[in-house]
Length: 310
Image (cartoon, rainbow, N blue to C red):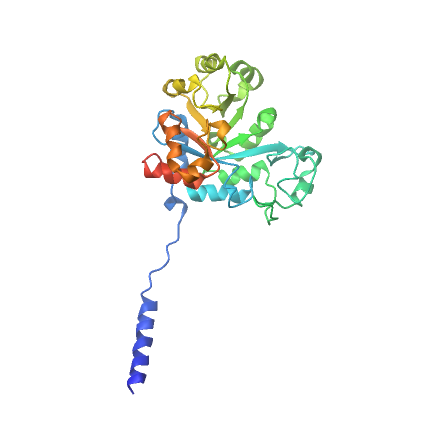
């Protein structure tokens, strides 16, 4: 009898426990970490903003194939500000996401992108960072921009030679205010080749160092048409241009430095930061407000703990 009563009591408690179990929370876009697209654009245009912009290199490639739609979606969910993707042209004139000139490393196929049609590329599957074939396809630039639209800023690498074609896709998708195109060009070269676009889309010059004429090149831009940012490649952290970063930002342009590999940042790279996140202090101490990273979650955590990112 006692055993029966005990069994009924346990059943009752189980039902109560089940009935009152709180419902699991579902996260919607407005509840995700990070900034709204309006805030992202405002931050991009404000070189003196305290919010550091985090750029995910080729998307969240540690958890999805690089340059895949899923890699972009992961960045949006994580609260990353900008995703960097690579653009190449197919044999039949379509623009697709691919870093290398060939598809050998990142797909289950082989050959040059420019010798393949879009149909041929769409039949392939992307390979992840461990070399495992996935169900993901090679995206077109248009597909990628539609995923990013209203959600995240986009940086187009490998895009300068096909600037006009990239611009057409960006305009068609209604993402002009979200996209940054970049290239290793002087102010005069950019103005001559693509000046008609520069009031409609963000452009960022890439400036590898060392370069004895680096200040003159920077000032040429600042005196004529201030870009949204300058991307600097810093093999040593003792280069004199670093002392100029705060002045550049005061004149209206942000400063972008990659945390990817040691030769980009004088040894203050993502892999060192994975062992000690305070490695990222160097970027903040030197007035760098845009950081491209291969470890977006790590960098976001570091910045949020210091009140430098939402």
